Image 1: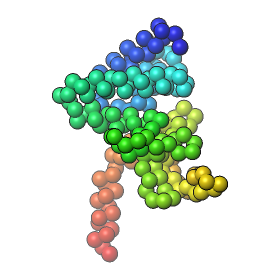
Image 2: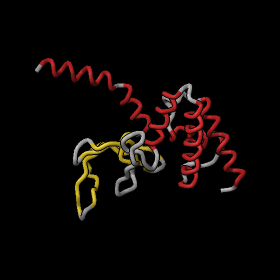
Image 3: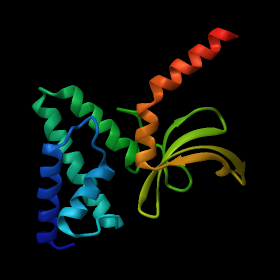
Image 4: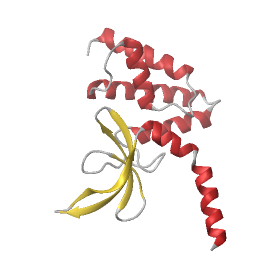
Length: 171
């Protein structure tokens, strides 16, 4: 990648981050917005890695500034969840599965939540796995949510919890 292109990407990504609500922004959204502004496909592996490094550098600078530390920490966690590593939150080693997908958490021995890239889209996958020849492989039992579907799901968590409590109180 040429230095001029790198500089354009860096300044555009930083500008987007400065203007963003850090509670809602994700690395995928930053990459998509920068891609649209620059007219460059930033979903290529080398571009993704460079955008991630710019985002991480920006976040580190913001963290060192200090005043909005809570917002910055939330953003760091979001970026870790999307990146090539970060399962388990701050300070944890980044765990990847056999396909290189980021493991966010293990719900049980056979179920886990992962972040993966598929056809240029970031997906949150909640899926069952089985072991074969020492490898853990995904089954068809599960669901993969796009960024938009995940956002809708997150917004409706309180309603889901309320409905579950209501059902439990009937039993």
